[in-house]
Length: 306
Image (tube, rainbow, N blue to C red; front, top):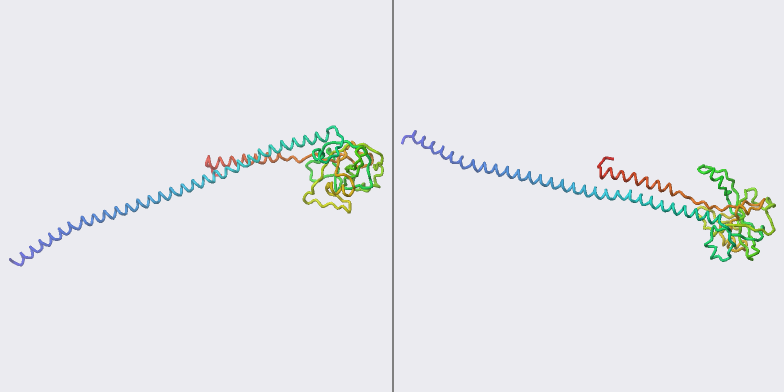
């Protein structure tokens, strides 16, 4: 065989080998590319699924937190509504108490009972007594201003008052029909009339009949000074201490205005008006309830941005 013929045969075999190799590798390579694409696609799907799960978890947590906040904030209008309703009932109770006090202080007077147990249930009740004053043992509760309902009504809402400070004069009173000595708040005197010699006309020694309002002992309020027994300066009604100083029974009455003796202290110094600001509280609480209810409705029902 010639050299040329041999070269031709070798080239023919080489082409066949290359063709077979190419035909063998190409499908394998294509399969590799497809497997890689499928793997990448699968990874993308897994990542997208995880993202979706994460978003779903976040949304569920946000909804859960939103639900908790929603019902927690609903407690505000519910609570304010309850407080407003409670103040309505408190106002009704206070009005009834004021009415009862007014009836007691204007009712027909009864004889003074001497049993302390009975007196505990008779505060603000009008009683009638007859006897004589012992002016030598006067006690003074101060500072006090004159109880004048008409003046107080005129000056209601003012920052200052025109009332003059003075004292209430407490005098032992021996009840001739009962045989006991009680304490009587004869009434108000201004500063310049506290000393007995400045009002000699009103220091009667004859037997008199008077009507008074039963009062019980009084607890010292915060910031109120303690009573100074030695200096005869009293700041609150301590019946036990007053009775010990004067030798009287622990029975105390406020003389009514009609029992005022000319030239003496002015009677009728019983304060029967009670603070009644419950209507303001009712308006405040119900107003807060209305506002917070609207805000809750707009935020969680209407989904408005506040």
